[in-house]
Length: 110
Image 1 (cartoon, rainbow, N blue to C red):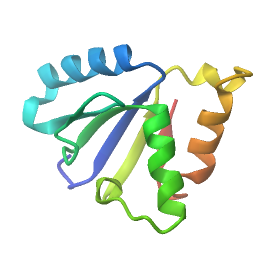
Image 2 (cartoon, rainbow, N blue to C red):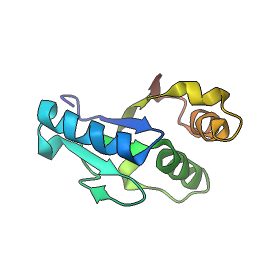
Image 3 (cartoon, rainbow, N blue to C red):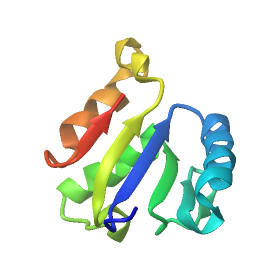
């Protein structure tokens, strides 16, 4: 945050995203944490944004098709919570696509 870069924290479930949102607001302050799920869009320009992995995948996929998303500007790090979903036959593709479509300069943490 001090250098003006963003961090995304992705989770497999909206309920976990909501939980992390509240938890990180207590640590970093409400003004510094945002939330993006299918149901909520709260402070998406914050330096820390919590979202479902599907939301992140959709953003980077659209970005590959020249649909620039200002939320992706200055993104430095993406944290993939529950990355063991990579091995899930039904949902693993979302994690794979998220990694493959991410900017190669983006730091990824699992």
